[in-house]
Amino acid sequence: MVLRYLLRFLLLCSTLTVQAAWAEENSPANPPSENSARILESSPSEEESPRFGPLVQRLHDIVMSDGSPVRLPQSQFHLDQALHVPDWLHLSVDFRTRYESYSQPVKKNETTGGAQFSERTDVNMEMRYKPFKFHAEFLDARPLYNYGVIVSGNMENRNDMLQLYGSLWSDNFLGSGQPTELQIGKFTQAFGKSRLIARSFYSNVPYSFVGAHWSWGKATDWQVRAFAMRPVKNQQTSPDTLDSHTNFFGLSYLNQRRPWLHTELYTFTLTQTAEGQGINGRSQEQITTGRRPHLTTMGFRLFQPEAAGAFDYEIESAYQFGQSALQPGGPPLTTFSFFQHGEFGYTFNVRWKPAIRLEYDYASGDKNPNDNQNGRFDPLFGTYGFSFTPTGIWGLFKRSNINSPGYVLSVQPVNNLRASFKQRFWFLAQAKDEFQGADLQDQTGQAGTSLGSDLDTRLAWTAGPNLIVEGGWLYLIKGSYYSNLLSQGVAGSPNDKNASYMFLSVRLIF
Image 1 (cartoon, rainbow, N blue to C red):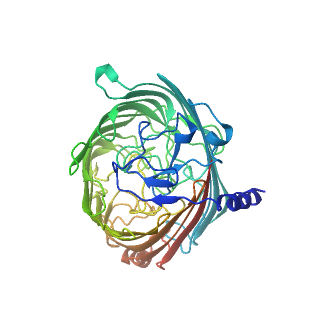
Image 2: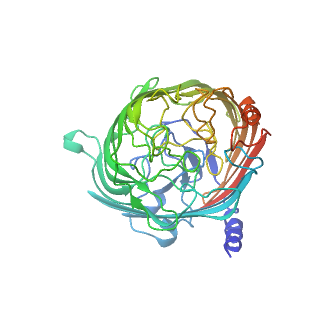
Image 3: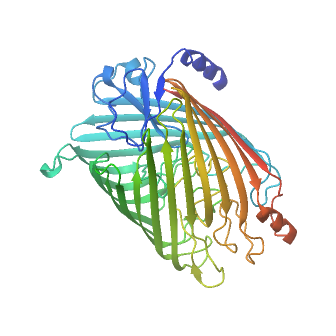
């Protein structure tokens, strides 16, 4: 039944075309015309995203599976247009179906590859009547077919109210001329490049929180943000519950007034007063739960956005201190850890808009598992984009105990088609610490640090304002770490054969 309706939608939407202009990060370009789309660096603010007001002026903001925001013109099939909603109301439905698989075991206790066919339905309703706003988001995410896969909370969440919050907002806070908004309720959040706090768009289920979030200023100029919230536990097939033992606080400042030096400063504090239900890095993107942390994370970003015919760069550096356990249920240990990211790129101002980017990521690991100290970086509630690793059923590499250089190439052959290629080289930061994404560990360190390298290609086709098709193929060349684990007889080790991962997704947006 679902496939039959899907085919009907595809036939309908394939008759609609859109010219997609893949623009640079936070580009000060003019608003797109009714037959164009553009990519933004981060989720656009309401001033940049006209979801309200006259129907003829409305645009639709979505985020691709690699985290890239896209602005699409609304067609007659978008709910706003089809239902002729009033100026103060916005409605949308986003349906995605995806198949993904990998060919060989890559994680602990796996004996085969894995596959999954899943559906995700996301329904949004937003009302705005100055100075009030109300936002409700319903999510139904479920796998329809699984092979060799442990279904986790980032894959399945049935009949969930993902967001339900009210807010107060103003265009002129205390006469400053800057906007402000105070959100209270259940919501998702993303900061910076989503490395530490994210709304994941590749995995089926993003993190959500209950609490308060306040912002002051425009993200395109300068902005202060503060929050106090608790994470929500996804129960997959039953109503979600609040993690009442965990508190999460944060403050950030973003300044983008200087074109060659954009800055972001942040501090986040995570405390857990009692042991929660433990989960591990294999079953979730987040690996904090159950480790009873009291961690403070302080960091900064320096960056220059992408622009045609210009160089761009980004540096992010974060440091953690406090206490956390190495394993769920383990004793809290004195913790000092850090994460570093650097990238440098250039976008050519010629046809096809080719771009090249060199990247490097380092997240510290625990040097000695028996010294009663923890040096492993905790990625908090972050996620991973195309340049790092796919999540979904793959999720092999996490921002913890990892050392990885790489490069990314991208081209735009036609206006509505983007192709990207990435190669990464993967090493453990500390040989004795756990390989987090695979749940593997050799406490002697004799297996070494060489995890291998991967080749990753993706295509994204904006077939129309209501249809997006994405696909990708990744080839993992396993390093000596896998074969050394086998030779040492480490329990649960997968084979050392190279593995392929692929996915194909179709999104219908109304």
